[in-house]
Image 1 (cartoon, helix red, strand yellow):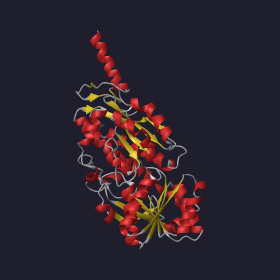
Image 2 (image 1 turned 180 degrees about the vertical axis):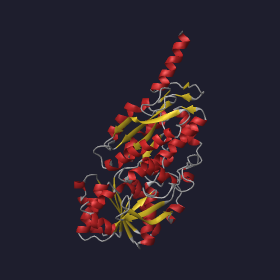
Image 3 (image 1 turned 90 degrees about the horizontal axis):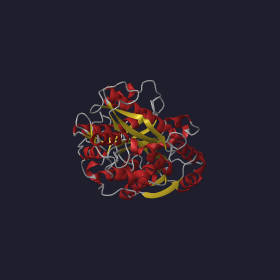
Image 4 (image 1 turned 120 degrees about the horizontal axis):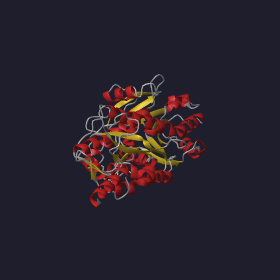
Length: 424
């Protein structure tokens, strides 16, 4: 009886989660520990499968990226539903709806809600924000919890528990400055950005590219909030740079672009990917944005013709297009690949998923990223995605942007040796 009770306790610990839970085995011989149960997931309709629980921490109510974040969450729900409809992974369905929390884009809140859910999930399918994710990074490492960032800071290239996708902010800004020099004839660049792993990483890339190209460079830090942009606006109007690399939130971008234009600024803006939302075309700054603004991006938008984009649109039919959906869908592919590899290895423990990540030579993004993306087995320099795109606001496009420059690698990113994060 002692032996039987020990097995029951072990299985309960493995299913329910909690630090220090020892691995158990399911009927197929696959090892499991946190966030994996033999009981079916709620509401998936497959009583013959167990359940893998994933966590989501996002900016859902009052932070600067809430408009994008809600779309990211809905997209990932649709992504994992498609996985379940296609047979699940290793005899399990995926649940990402039970453990969803709001971080309000606040690192302290992010850590708090993470601590509340971490014992009940195998991995995080979303941890939104660079500074917020940095707040839980030591714990992710110590618990071997693989996570998917809704952000692109270059630090993630050096963190094997973080499954980044696409060009990071540093590379994206390098390419933006090279585009500004080669296509816009820019001689001076200013980075206007939030402080921390988001804005400072982009500013670091812009500086590296500007210095490498012989352009004059300056940098201005700003804070979130429409009423906090006066200093940035004054700096732009005073310095009159040819191009501003803008790394803020969409509402902040509207204020900065609109008010600098109203004060006579005629230079161009290139926004880092989270800066854009098509709602800007309906804002009071719309005319200035159409005239002055470019948008850089790590992948193509909603209406693109690729198998992945088509699958996304089919899974999200009826929604108003938004590239938060596109980002959420793309970000989920590496975790799917890691779970599939872990199931193949018969090890769906946290350590097993991390070991599977180390074995990934590539990820099938179904055409949403260029060939070769998703190599997690190489060094950071080998795995770095160096290609990004440039768009402009365009009425009539599903998410308000039209392509200016397809996937390209500028000379700065091409020659860059990725030996440490651009910003730490």
